[in-house]
Image 1: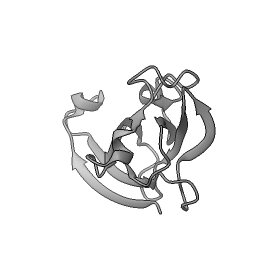
Image 2 (image 1 turned 135 degrees about the vertical axis):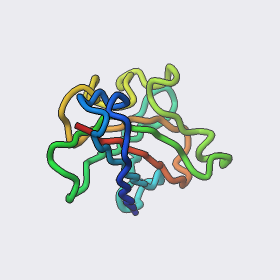
Image 3 (image 1 turned 90 degrees about the vertical axis):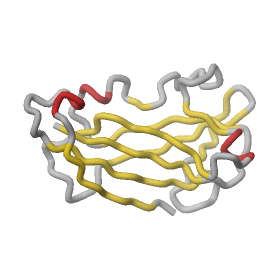
Length: 139
């Protein structure tokens, strides 16, 4: 099941390329299950290089001002030391993602004004793990 946590962070404007140093950025977290059959699972039927692709649709939640857009997506898998996470990677970090070479699509999402993006990963096992994302939004 997907879970969502929203935090407001005050960031230095230069960090996000904002024109002023007092620009506010927001960060939210979203979790997806990895195992197939779980509600909201990112597991796909698409295979490549002996494993399955993971596809997670990330959207800015309601209530975030409409003039803020996705600027960064940071992935982690938990529990990190589990066999399920050891067999899971973000596309772009190795050569297993032939059809999805970028970890987040569309490419250059962070310089476009997008409120949704798709994260791509790859795994050799359907074992359960939590795919966790920290998403930075800004002007």
